[in-house]
Length: 120
Image (cartoon, rainbow, N blue to C red):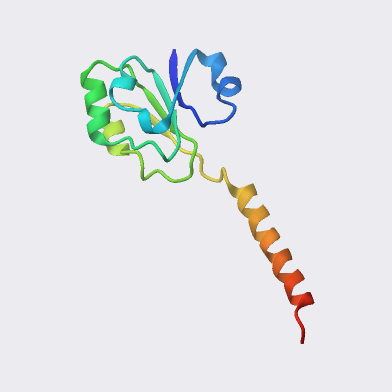
């Protein structure tokens, strides 16, 4: 199996390397031509995977059968076009929950500290 993974996805070699041949490239450079001989694709929100790209890749004989995004949002992927071609799709809901919690707690601590230091 040949997997194309966005170059900015951390830990891709450890996570996906055992599954087959791993190819890395910048997310903005991923297009129909890049998908020509790719079985699986792992992207971030920077990569726009629209119907034209998917349709062109499949028309050129791409064996693409899985697309995964390392993000919560899915608006950068045309899921209907994937479904038309029988391509499985997965996103990562909840993947930033810990970071959001850290940010909120840090903000609350900062606010509490500022209120203690403010006169009055």
